[in-house]
Image 1 (cartoon, one colour):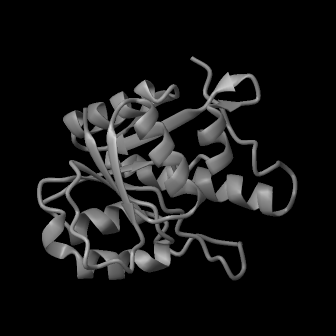
Image 2 (spheres, one colour; image 1 turned 90 degrees about the horizontal axis):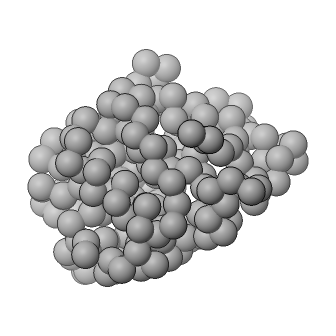
Length: 191
């Protein structure tokens, strides 16, 4: 059993908490402004908007050392919905990893909507969680939590692949925002 700390209280945070607890893991969840609560989990999920990440990292800098930190953000321009706000050759996950070098940063869940995580399916296919990161053990730990929660986990490669995951998340969000797909839809990986 793994102890998971989720910073955030929105739909994605709730859905990820549900997956973790369904698989028999313990979860602590708190808002990003609850700075009086220390992170105690082995895995820390940053379920906050990208615009809040720097604040969370600076306020809790000493609490990420040795932890698996899961970045679920999609760093897009939410005013225009027309671009990502990170350099084309980088990613939000890479920026986070550079700011907390003692942590094992993963990119995951950003290509999913809360509804598909909760339902466990996209259409008739199991919901797939793509995981990118440089630490094999960290990816295996998160994949085990995802699988135990009833979803499919796919290793998407190194942390450098986070930029493609963020582009895919951006595409999915813009399709949903323009009502070309539903917020309960998404992409499925069939293996």
